[in-house]
Length: 323
Image (cartoon, rainbow, N blue to C red; front, side, top):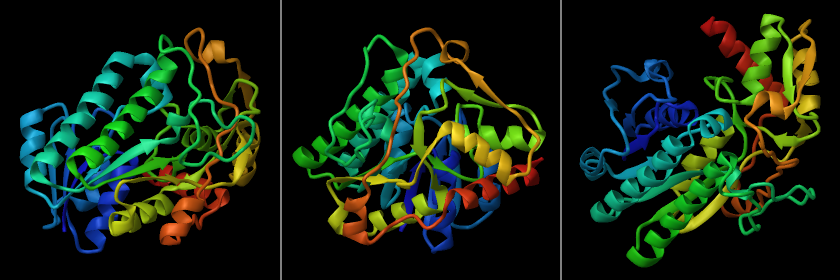
């Protein structure tokens, strides 16, 4: 099979490219390197089954040509990270809405199956009562005037577009909602908490915990997430459906900071930073986000296999190597 991977130079996208080439598929990456980095694909450069195209998913003519040249599309390109969304809301909305529409429209014209990468951000602040979020859970988001929620809104519309292309035009689509995927190649500069903590711990600088530190998340190793993606694109039963992909082990951000310091035997301190000092005024966060992964377990038997200790160790090893 020949795959077009948009955003293939990004964190998850690059790992997906590695896995596809490793199993014998061909990959064409489309990326404008706005958040992805070419270094993530160094190991594939020169491989006969790999090609990199520098360009944007907003380029309709380019998207149409590339989609027509492959067997399957994996759409990972997006404006990502809380810092990016808050700082550049208009650019983020344009990329996440118009870009996805371009991909789906081209895929429909050329009758190519598409996997759309979505996010647990679509749930907003739902799940704060501790009930695991399943695929049909209601969304709870704040005012549309607050840039914090624009990513959630955009990804939700992306999902609706994909599903309606499937329902009305018969386009084979699969949707994946990633929950806090972490691992090697992820950077902390976009607000990603685990690599940010690990980098600080390795440098011996303070770990900055925003807010109270009582907000909790579940972290899934990127290798586990990629395994889910590959199994889903090979499953006909997954067409027209959305799946949560994540780990269901919950930890508070405060406890995560302590765990990183302890695991890496760091001398770093932990600093509590109020949200008002880290983000623009009126920033809103969600207290808990725990995925219900029973649907994907039931369909393809997937479940995460790596724990948080393995994740911290892998990120630390990657950072040490890069430095």
